[in-house]
Image 1 (cartoon, rainbow, N blue to C red):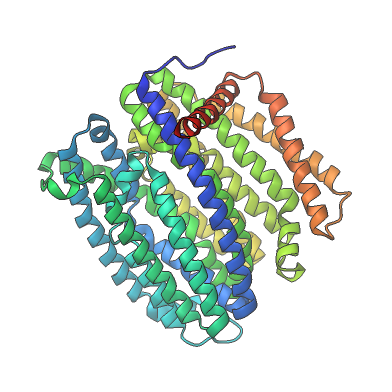
Image 2 (tube, rainbow, N blue to C red):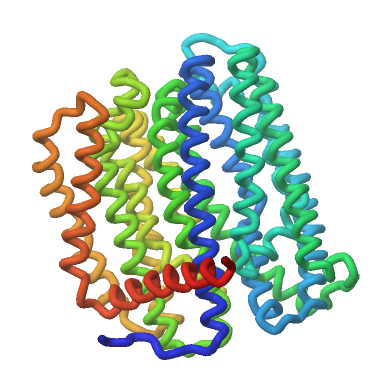
Length: 524
């Protein structure tokens, strides 16, 4: 059997163990979150109605745009922490965390000021056939939730950078359950949306505070070592933050303005319908992000101590993994999306088939870029791509308005595909290959094209097969899902089974399973 990766020292074993632990806990967390979100959404719609659902989606989106004040600072923090963590330099780590505390206070203040300044403009953004009371109070509570999300969180990034993200997931699970129970009780008992939002704010604050206390217990030197970064180090960190800010600024505008434009041009209720589909997309992204977050810190550690050719092989492995995961998910969405919404909420909540296909493409395209983003963030290449998403977001806004005025919801969503295709979808892979791997990017794009053709052919085959099953029951839905799992993975296995990247992934997951089983047996 071909071995595309050389044997590595025990540090690699440690990375694999942490990655596996992050993956398993992440899966459990995401399943729990998925169940809670769908139950909560179902009850929310039945109790409060689609108008409040639209308001909920719109304000959450506006505050996501405001999170651009975050500057994407989490990425810059993790990038700065990789080397001192690898070297166990507690003094630098403590100094960095202290420095980031000051930055996060500034961020929270900026979010509060900008958020409050938008209050007079809510009447132009919210577009409902019938007015709802207390719109400004709802918005202020969403804003407060965004502000408190920055409090205490600066410490917990150290846990993620140290590949112990599973600890945060465990704590988050507990608070998610508490929030869910409290919100459902309030909805049924009072039908009061304000109390529903107050519980959201209290949950966010409590969760962050608890995780902060736990971080100090895991890394007690954070309180003991009172040091400041020297000016040279601060300057380096600031350059990283500035580069990430410019990139994240464009990314947040790109990903979080659609709902605002839809609300203005089409109506706030349309935001509610779209948010049902986006809830499922978010849930699936939660599962895929488990893979990304589980390996990201490992890659960051890898960048410190491994040769370029080895890292390029890791990149190709991640590319195959992301195609498999996002390709499989995209085909499942294509076959099952409308059926799922119909069974869950009823046919009255369905969007057009064209809109659904556009939503799926918007899910698939950035999914393929995840390996690019992992290496971009962990190698510092974000300095060279800092302007690209700003260009993408400007093109997206212009196209969204123009196409939205003519084609409505599908025009707004389709504009994002065009904007990505014209800019970062080709530019970022080009920069990574040219400036970091020092290899031609043609092979990458050709491979991507071939795999996408395979994806479309598989989707067409499954559509033909499952077309015989009219969605009239949960049983038929389950049959379709079963066929998706068998056919998609079967075809992917046949095509990729002899590739070195697939062989490595297969051995990696088998070794991880065996290692976990041995650990459990030894504990018993």
